[in-house]
Each structure stands twice: as C-alpha cells, then as structure tokens.
Amino acid sequence: MHLGAQELILILVIVLVLFGGKKVAGLGKALGTSMREFKEEVNKDEQPADTTVQAAAKTEETPAAKAPETVTAGADKKEN
Image (cartoon, rainbow, N blue to C red; front, top):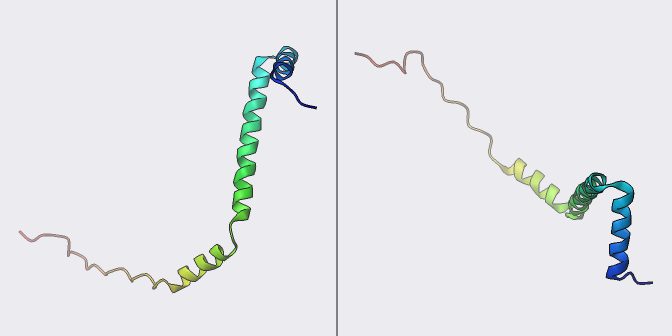
C-alpha cells in the first residue's frame, strides 16, 4: 500500500479541517522538539564510555593549582 501525493494532500486537508491551523502548527512544533531531544539522547548514548575514563584520567594528571600570591598591605599605594 503506497500513499501518493494526492492521498497525502487529502489527509492533510482533512486534518486541517478537523483540528484547525493553530493546533496543527503546535503539534508540528512539539513533534519537532521531541524528535530533536530524542536524537540528542541517542547520540549521547552512542559515545564510547572510554571518553569519560580518559577525561577522568586527564583531571588527575593536571598539576595542582598554584597558591595565590600574598600581597602585603600598602604595597598597592604609591608614595608621593
């Protein structure tokens, strides 16, 4: 069973008559948002688990942060 262009147009016209233009537009927007979120989650799950292990190893290899320099009181003031 194949749907041709004429059948699809007829179905779209019937949907517009039944639900109205605003509701159909809102449904299309919601469907697009849902599809985008689904694709993002699928792509997130497809990333190999090794990347998280490598990222954890890199944070352990980085040197410790330097201690802040001590500033004596009055060092910022200029003598006249």
